[in-house]
Length: 341
Image (cartoon, rainbow, N blue to C red; front, side, top):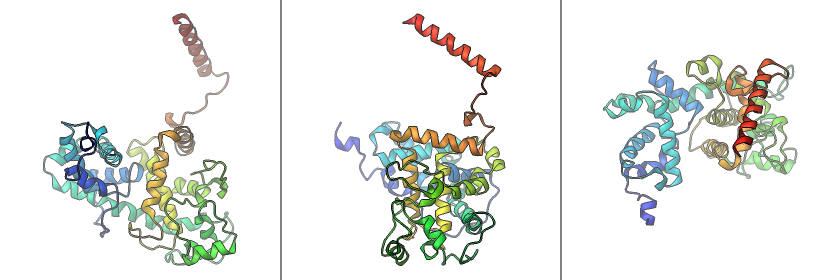
């Protein structure tokens, strides 16, 4: 197969959309929240599966690509297109009848989904803006100097507490030169330079960078209370029984923005670089080579947020009837395996 066949040309309809569909679209004013079930479901999808994308472009490119795939294979497309198509199929599969509605000319449905991005981010950004201040210091203590709930200009590297939490892992916030460089902007922090608040105890081990990652206390507080992605009632309505990779990346992104001094959640904000941050977290969680650590992480979160779910893989009590049944079954299977060899 030739290079051109392996990599569809840029003139292909799907290729035109691939560069932007999994990135935020142009910023626009959020429309009035709709009670349309499609909108409600789509907002949940954005919080728990994939966010920060251009939904109309994702849907349009996905529908066109389905036609192309009648004569080709998805493996023949570049990695970014394959990922985009996977997100598209997840969205289609998560809402029965959505593909039919989109392909029968109901343009209003695409418009509704196009409104999801500003609605979702706006709701959660506004909520966490003030809520995050309650989790900066232990209960009973106060933040010094105090931080405003409505104005963010004194957050980020402009404040001792938020600066320490946002300081990239591997840098020493207690070092005066480092602190001044971060505050002045001389040291530019990219989205893939992860902050200390992602780590348990806010401690980073350069020899074991997975240790405590995405288990930071402020993340735990935010997941227990906000945003809506993991609220028990909202999760129940959408059949959510475990914490997803998308929800963890989304919550981390929202907390990072809430701690920053930026006032507007935008893809063009080079200070927070939120889009790069979100994608870098999701890239790690979706990396097959990191599956062992990721499974352990997601199980840990699910046990905490959904303790009664079968997905939490609860430990069985020793000497219980259930443990005896499983031991007997394991013994029978072991003997069966021996007999077949």
